[in-house]
Length: 78
Image (cartoon, rainbow, N blue to C red; front, side, top):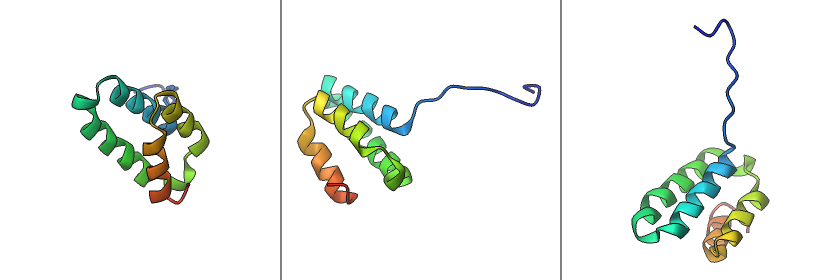
């Protein structure tokens, strides 16, 4: 179908999490439940392989450090 190869740029899981953190910060009432569940699912799937420093910067940028701390404790990255 693609002549044997296909190049596609994709986001890193940490960047997807960052976008979800931004969505929660922008509209917490409507986005928190779904996006938080998506974040947890990504962490469950990629846990130890995630760049926790990079994710921490997103949480810090949007004033959600306490939530990041709780997730870090849950996944032993506190």
